[in-house]
Amino acid sequence: MSVDAAYDEVERLTRREARNFAYGIRVLPRDQRRAISAIYAFARRVDDLADGELPVEEKRERLQSLRAALDAAPEEAMLVALADARARYGIPKAALHDLVDGGLQDTEQDRYADFPELDGYCRRVAGAVGVACVTVYGSDDVERAATLGVALQLINIIRDVREDWELGRVYLPQDEIAAYGVTEDEIAAGHTGPEWRALMGFQASRARAHLEEGLGLLETLDSRSAACVSTFARLYRVTLDRIESRGFDVFDGSLRLSPLTKLRIVGAGLLR
Image (cartoon, rainbow, N blue to C red; front, side, top):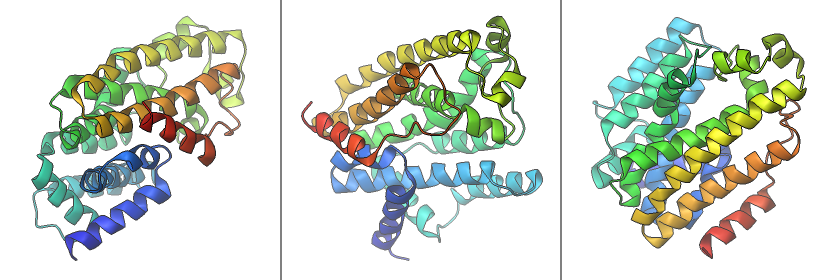
């Protein structure tokens, strides 16, 4: 498969599957947009394996094979595109390994005792995406890129409580759930009483603090890369604001932003 054909495939995947990612990268020049799409396609493969219906041992075997494929001659489109992007932009292999480790962690762990434990997970599954992408943007500020990735993952965790519960997972720290007087039976029932709202308000405050810190990354980026990253941030910030305005009722699955809203946010990013 040619490199151009491989990039065409990962871009199609990104446009079809990415909830927010595809909107942010629209503002990037072609080569950077294609490289970010290759990173997304790799991260998506990890997620699909970790969240799929295969037996746990088979999930783990496939994730380990995906890790090994990073050191082999690429054949399938996603790996061909990713290999070219790595060569062009110096995308660190360690960040891709961290993504695989995060997928493996999802096959082993479904509860997190406290925030430091959850933070370690978030840095693997989302901070690593930031670290992988930041070289494509032309910055070496990996710490704030990782923090921004964690911020977006924390917002995902708030938004996806119901979906994660259906997968048997609770990412909200167990000590904080207990401290606010929330039970897992209430999560299962979709109960949004005052205890739930207080717990989730605390989670939202933490996510916003990480977002603010991570957005310091913009100072190191060129105008189009900064527009891309600020678009991601706006998309997630608007999502979090809407969740909060509904009293953190995240149980009916109706909190996705419309394509029109996303396009307006992209436009605002370009005018930044």
